[in-house]
Every structure is written in C-alpha cells, then in structure tokens.
Length: 52
Image: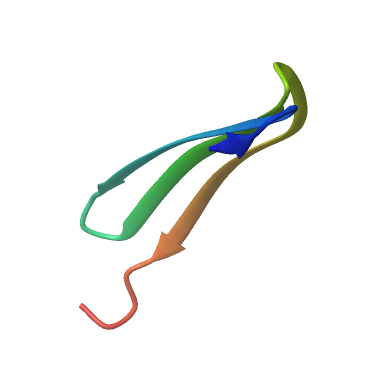
C-alpha cells in the first residue's frame, strides 16, 4: 500500500493452540514505512477456558 514517495507494509502472524484448561495465543506485528521498520509488537497470552 502507498502512494508516490510513501510506501507502507504491515506483516502479522498469529498462532493459537489450546489444551483442556487454556487457550494460548502468540502473535507478532511489524510495520514498515519506506523500507524502515517503524513499529513492532509481539505478544504471548494464556487465557483460561472458564466456560468450557
């Protein structure tokens, strides 16, 4: 995505798994503007399966 003189790219990846007691979410996001990384975020969350 972009326009003349401005080019952006966003990459994201998410992995989800579960066992009998928890959901596991791992992800990453990288944003680039004109070929330079301007933002990066990673997460690793564990969520209890309370209603199952």
